[in-house]
Image (cartoon, rainbow, N blue to C red; front, side, top):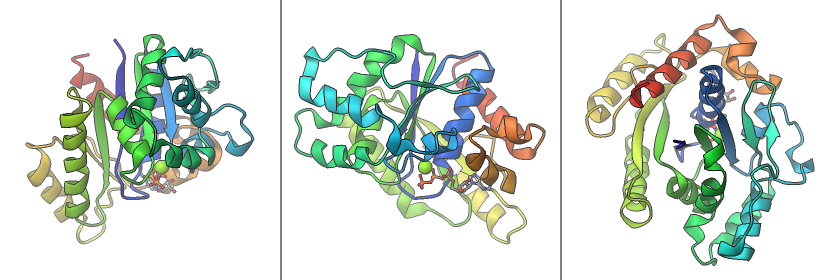
Length: 265
Ligand SMILES: Nc1ncnc2c1ncn2[C@@H]1O[C@H](COP(=O)(O)OP(=O)(O)OP(=O)(O)O)[C@@H](O)[C@H]1O
Ligand SMILES: [Mg+2]
């Protein structure tokens, strides 16, 4: 059975892409077959896996989504089309700027929220996990990701208390759940870039736990701040390859285990 997880938060720079890449590769290191889907026109996931010029890629997520939009249910999707195979054992459906044009196009399309889901359904039999890296907005691409997903994992940066933003995200998730995807679950909040040297970090950390651990769920594992994490995206590697003994690699290893425990594995 394949599980599809969207990594979402409309706030920018909270660690969505870093979490999607390292959780995906963490799962692959545990023997799982993993597809990473870059659903952000910035192509950060594509670049951080070492594909430095996403605009030169011939087939990307926007190519396959456009095909589905044009052909509807008659569309034949080849499971290999556009897929890149990364050296660390994950597959990637890349993205580039064309995805923002597609997002505009989606607004007037029939079944506009379910286009990514049709793609995911066509390829999911091949994988144990599909992880979708969302863009920092609650626009049509993120709605597509939430509609295609079984669960959503929410990275939250502990630099400030993100109450309003989180409420808005949770209410969007609930709306998608009511109207488009009844089975959507919240996998939990993961706190990222945690820096207990700052005055407020522990305070915010505890407040988030207190406020959300029952209602939404929070992961026990948190991701500490480290320059090593920032370096990996420039290297096209995971944190496990870049600095396997460091605290961020250990944390992403723990996060992977915690996620597998959700499945009872
Ligand atoms: N644990 C960490 N410690 C230090 N820096 C980190 C850590 N995790 C991520 N970063 C860095 O913080 C920046 C933002 O991270 P990332 O790109 O993963 O966030 P994002 O939520 O995907 O951003 P966007 O909203 O633009 O898509 C990047 O430069 C990344 O390398
Ligand atoms: Mg990102």
